Image 1 (cartoon, rainbow, N blue to C red):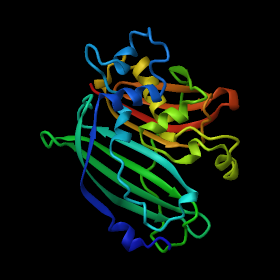
Image 2: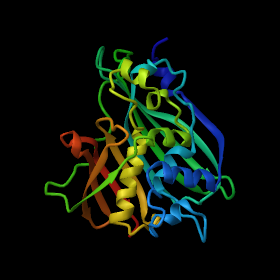
Image 3: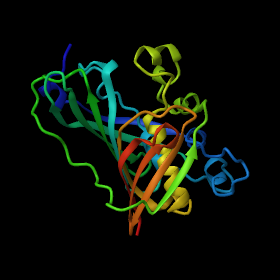
Amino acid sequence: MALNYEKLMQLKREGDRFKYTDRETMLYAIGIGMGADPLDKNELPYVFEQPALKTVPSMATVLTRIPLLKDCGYDYSKVVHGEQRLILHRPLPAEGELVASARVTEAYDKGAGKGAVIYTETAARSAADGQAMFTLNSVTFARGDGGFGGPSGSGPAPHALPDRKPDSTVTLGTSHGQALLYRLSGDRNPLHADPELARRVGFSAPILHGLCTYGVACRAILQSVAAYDHTRITGFDVRFSAPVYPGDSIATDLWVDGTIVSFRCRIPQRENIVVINNGKCLLAA
């Protein structure tokens, strides 16, 4: 089975429902490294329900898992997550029920041997009042599926980082078991747990989930720019550029221009390889 452009563009789902509790909210926060110091009064509200539990904005990426592309025809073994974008229409509650819809919005054929790029959108609303909660836009790079007959071209250009030195840098460590913990938030891909599989596909060890790195970057901005006020972050966009290994330290370079925070993430102990690029965080005014 191969990609078919017409069928791909018709893929959509409506009315999928997802419930989550404060358990999932705390598990997500711990999975991106919060609570490592249980005496940290700034992070404790994200991992302890009293007096009121806060939510990490990037948690929106794990609350709705819709298998939209599961049987689309691409070679799953050669698929990578290229970009992730998030719009928060209002802060996430600590628990709730969501109703979500998903669709393919764009697909580009880079040519035989060059891959395909698929854009999907997931929109989630509160089941309680029907109001919009968040919109996710993901870019999937199917490296083994170029030449399927779709249009050539590319989507919107990524956010450009400012042409100056970063205003600040926040470095956060990851634990050697972090991928095993983070996968309990929903992504059970064995690439993040099975050493033999990781070696077979070219990695020296299981890699950290890209969306876990995304969450660590969000945590860095919460800490350094938003004063741990989760309600200030209203958008969070990134381009993934290289894998992270559990145990790596992630240095997030930040540029602050009013309500726009530009950022990138790199690994100092691995020759400063950039693992997230073209990052853009929107802050409430």
